[in-house]
Structures are given as C-alpha cells and as structure tokens.
Length: 231
Ligand SMILES: [Zn+2]
Image 1 (spheres, rainbow, N blue to C red):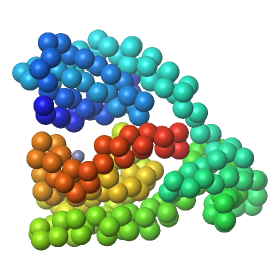
Image 2: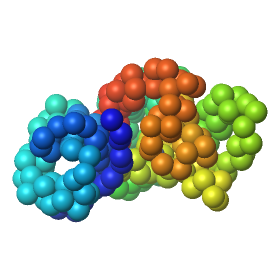
Image 3: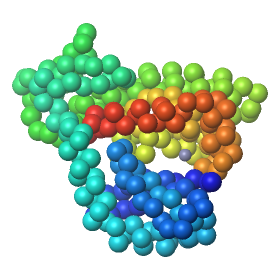
C-alpha cells in the first residue's frame, strides 16, 4: 500500500488529496472532516483518470464540504468568541478604538478596531498568530532536530505563511521549510524535516516519520479540531 499526495481544484477551491494505492477494484472517495479528499484506487490507474473522476464528483464534494462547515462553527472573530492559540483557549475582546491593534493578556485577546471590517479583524488575527509562530516554529524545530542526530540535515530557513490547503511545505534543495501560520505543531515540522531525507511521500518517507514519532497519525487526526480557527 503506497500513499501519494495531490491537489484537486474545483469551483475556485483547492483540496488536498491523499491517494492510497490498494488492491481495490474501484476508486473510492471519502471527504474527510479536515477537508482532505481521501481516495483509494488500484495501482495502475493514472492520476489524470482520477482527476476526471473527481471532476464528475465535484457536486458531491462541495456538498460534503458544506455539511462539514455546518458541523464546524465558522469563526467570525466576534466579541466573546473563544480563540485557541497553541492549544490554549482565549476569550476575544473586540472594541472600537483609535487604532487597529491586537494583543494577548492573561486569558484574553484584546482586539481594537479603528476600521471595523471582517478583513481587518482577520488581518489582526493573522498578525497575532504570526507573532506567536515566530516563537513556536523555531521551538518546534529545536525539538525535532535531535531526532535526526547523525544525519547531515541542513539547518533549514524557517518561513511561515497563511495557507489554505497544507500545513507545511519543504524545499529540500533550497533548505527552506515553510509552516502554516495557523498551526505550530511538531508532527508537521517533523513531516517537513523528513523531506530532507525523502523528497516524496513514499513508504520510506512514512517509515522515517514513524521511527521518530510513532503517534504522528493520531496527532494529525487531533489537528482537525483546530480547523474552525483557520479564517
Ligand atoms: Zn510532505
């Protein structure tokens, strides 16, 4: 059984695709609660054929996604909302003021808005997450690097970006790891670092993950609960 990662774009949305090659007769599709399309298909079916299959299923996929949206509350960044930062709950306090600013104090996130638009709320929220990520990503990197002791792994340049369809990415030749601003967690960091060993998602890649973090699959599943906080 091998697993491949792809992307599928429909109606302006890009879905991450996990494609597992198995001894099955047909292509099977499952829309996961985190928005990933999980497919199983026989070994020899080319990706282009599977893409056609997904195109025919577009209505079903969009409908399934809408159902997921109702299951997960959409974060509007309103006064009184609970925000999760690095796994900890904070109460959001929104008030109008002279400046556009955001800060964390105790268990509260204070958002001051001079111009109250959804875009500005989102911008400030991202600013807070970026500041947090500046501390959390290097800390996560230092926790994960010792797992590669004895291997000549480059000391990567860390970047972060707000991304909609992936949690991280790695450019092994350039030595750059980019993390999704929304989340600073070790299993994503480990995933990207393992790309310095294996630039693909082969069995060897996942073996390299599992040796270093046996419970990475459970951690990936737990990540789904943070999705409402990605706006
Ligand atoms: Zn990867």
